[in-house]
Length: 202
Image 1 (cartoon, rainbow, N blue to C red):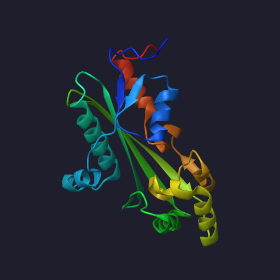
Image 2 (cartoon, rainbow, N blue to C red; image 1 turned 180 degrees about the vertical axis):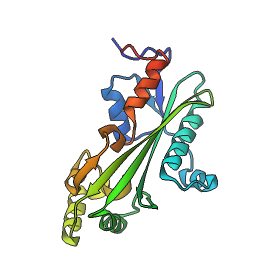
Image 3 (cartoon, rainbow, N blue to C red; image 1 turned 90 degrees about the vertical axis):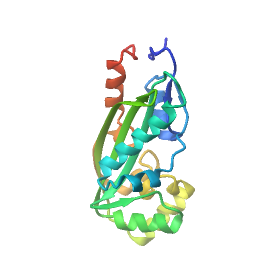
């Protein structure tokens, strides 16, 4: 018996492996359909600079984009920003940029702002942002190179050049925040919203 009670499947406006895993593990019946938006252009045009506001905007825009194509279906959009003080990070373009990001983050505390938004028929129904504080241990140049050797091409798929659910966990000494926020989807608040819409059996 499925937990999902919607008449149509839930849609995740993302192809993120971590986000798909979270929804799948939560027993939700969904399909993944990425939103074809230019995230950097949306961010630039908005004029926003606060990382949480940027994450919320992009999550909303992703959900809205897909919801306009899928009549009557609930669409989940999500986004995550990494901020070190006032500096925002993007996914590294290659190994050299990944090494630069890790050198900047090493020995310091940065914040992950994760946003989730739900839209239906081109209207936003729900948006939430949560924050995790991540303290990376001090890393020598040799340690960074050793990590990059082991992690391989995966370092270019995540902002900050790490994935906490795999080898990236070795980089940290302290984490404040829930697991779902770190993986890029505030799952508890999303489930609470879906429950309020009578879409879940539990």
